[in-house]
Image (cartoon, rainbow, N blue to C red; front, side, top):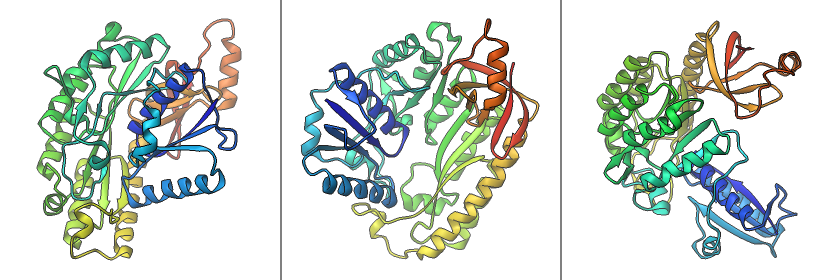
Length: 397
């Protein structure tokens, strides 16, 4: 029996897909990338934006039309609750085919954000048991992983056995003495626990120096309308603390442009916040009405052309900031977990793509054939000699 996975959206969806895939393998199934060859097709959908949901639904409609006799299951953040029951007999297992391990520690969200429909699919916040998380992480390390990506729907809400996210990160970082591997944190919403989390990250050298913060807007008025549980002052305090403790860290954020009643002044406030806080990796989305959300019913809609124009402006601002940030790595030594063995390429701790290049990688491998050979998943240091666009290029140390 063969199963084919199509996965949309975030790291959490990917983590769940990989674990479910491993569960199928454990039951004797094989995986395939071909819909035509599969006995079962599993689509892990995403509904975070109207465009994402449209893409998922377009694929689902195509599959149902082309393969009407095949079993198709839709799950993730776009569920077919009837067909999803068919997955209950498949117990998720430890996935081992990726270069980085995806560790799910939390699901759901207690938020009531006006634009978000995710809690309707994933429910209230629920944490994976603290000891269970550590056990899963140990199995990943035993399987040869050297980077573990901590994923969840809203990581700031993690709580198990009285332990919160900072406690979990500290425990993960200290597994096996904390040597030879690293931890990467997913998105971190501004909150009191987020400040403690930043301090926990800074206290452990093997936690990646990258934070992704879903800011959404630089206007307190718009954040209030969005029902976001923080202000720009909280965002600023979080970022300043992170920069003070970890100079040179990578800083990413989500920005939503054209939310209902967003004025030119509100948009200018967002641009100003991004300039002051020096975010260097931006995910920008023009607002789209999600049926079933509060925001879809709000008056004073911003014209679509303005939403998209503002998104382009923010994206251009982000490109400039990222170029400036990446150019600062020239001459530095960075650490990567190898994902592309031919090019000896992978992500740095700060979430910048770095590579040796196929020709130099081949020469290095040949020169060290009887000594050190770098493999996929290895954690290695690279001396950056040049910057090519947004890619670092260097040589193994």
